[in-house]
Length: 131
Image (cartoon, rainbow, N blue to C red; front, side):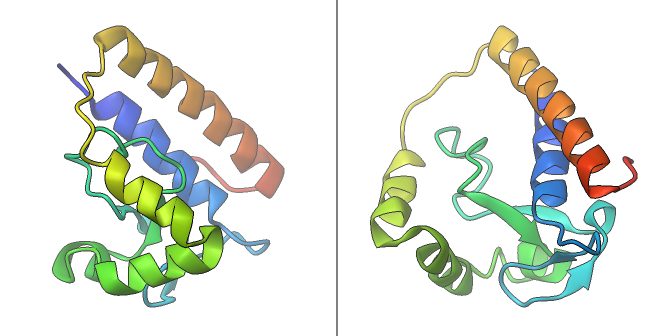
């Protein structure tokens, strides 16, 4: 099952969503500033966990150093999520990551279509060039 188009457009949406009024993203864990196309979509509950893979609360702009070399910098990531959403929502995210979920090809196509449209609209409203 090919999941990459859904991941591509979801990731693009998250990075555009997290861009500020100057079109810059700040890493959720270290604050590093970058353009949306050069920052990554960090997952608090890692991508292999289907229950949170496409959760907007689970995902935020994150620099490559924190996302890859620091394995997500989870302690700081969690603290930031608690500040943003509250402890209860973070506990729900943590429990959802282990849910047994199968995502059908049709669902992946719909996710890709939805986030492609949503990211395109948001990029226009924020005056961010798509990549």
